[in-house]
Image (cartoon, rainbow, N blue to C red; front, top):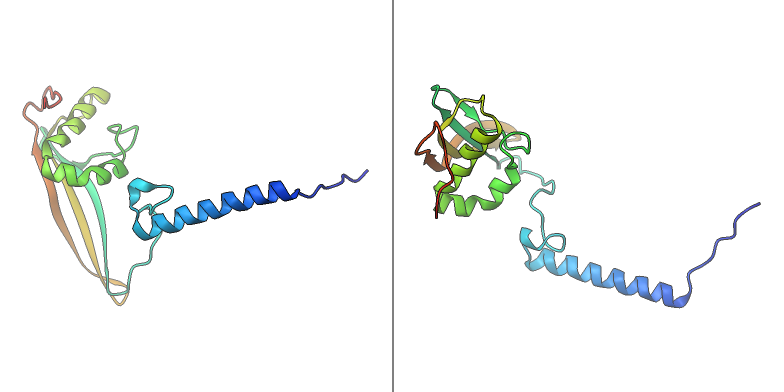
Length: 160
């Protein structure tokens, strides 16, 4: 037996129309004047975007010099140091003003992974890749913030 479909009544349609208009207005206003802090009604910088054929692409990451004398990328994941890359990028202006915030990564690595080499120095770096006619024309690395861990063998949180 076929099911009968019911149409929405005028009140249900009006209610949905109002919600649609309010949502569309919030997204439009957020797009015009908002920033990532206004998500979901403002821009989210992780949306895909196009890069001009003669533009630049940048990527931020954290590297550590260890007490063993090696340099390695800090795994910015929940299974790595418990902090994701987006969290670092979101705090980057604060980290640039106060690089001691990087101490928390040394502490997290020490606590979560006691078998890892200790971090002696941490840097937030940015790789900038220049494009010309859509092809790589050069790569540059910039240090955005740097922190020397006071006691790499037993790192402790910075007291503020």
